[in-house]
Image (cartoon, rainbow, N blue to C red; front, side):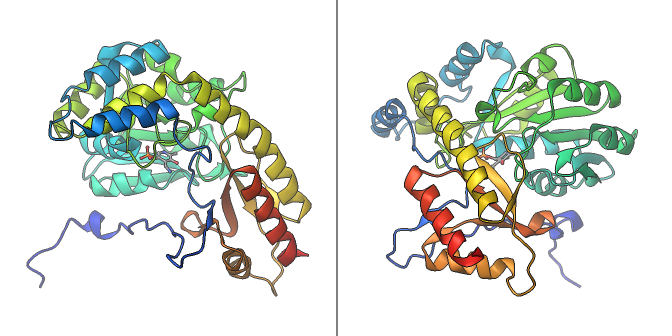
Length: 361
Ligand code: PMP
């Protein structure tokens, strides 16, 4: 018998190890992660360099300047914000604080896989509701809720499907869930979606006592490497997360750089405009070379590769790799014939389409 063993649910976790470009001296086009192709804002870079002179100091434990910057930018109450080392940390902290062994946590079928890891790390049981053609099915989520459901995670828009559900559907979900269930709205890609029927969930948080919003600086703000996320929610949730988070969980450069990024509206607009131009272009061109593209409101698309038995998806991935292009296989989502492709810079998008046309004919 092993003397030392983690909780059984921890044993079920398969660590996520994203593919990365081989260190072979070539300049890879990496469209496998959801990076901002324009990089970080110049104002953020300046703040980062300035912060470097102060890294002998501990960061602000209560994250005050950053929370104030977020509150100002989003017109929300500073006392209901908490910041974390990426939104992934916040997802884990919420799962740990609100669910444990014997509890159930709801997720959707193709929902962001970080939820499952956090649920298992907390020792709780994941209950997975079916989706409909890559779109969250609110009624299916409500049907799976029980008196043991402590949390319901909703990624809206979702990764890797790129699809979203409108604000009225989120309201229906909240109304249909039991009052003891915390609805967590993970709006990591909200900045890319300006459709009139979409909301990141701010108002629903303000009008309920069991809903929280999660956002990140990793996508639109181009700070994925810095690790900053934040949450906005009821006092009970913010207090619980503050109680269990590391005292200095968001580093000093991370706090100062993220705050500066929020003041660069120009960079945000440039990022939005770039995506608004190249997302439809990429979707159209991928369809033209034979892929089925799901409608995305994010900075990536999910595309089904034609299932010609003589040409498996691995052959497509290998061909792209020979051309120095990396895309993401999404087998962990049960989507063995799909790729998630991030919108890159103009030349990257064009190189991808040329390489795909070469192999798909
Ligand atoms: N939520 C969703 C939906 C995501 O796609 C990701 C990153 N892939 C995260 C949360 C975590 O992002 P980060 O930890 O970089 O904030």
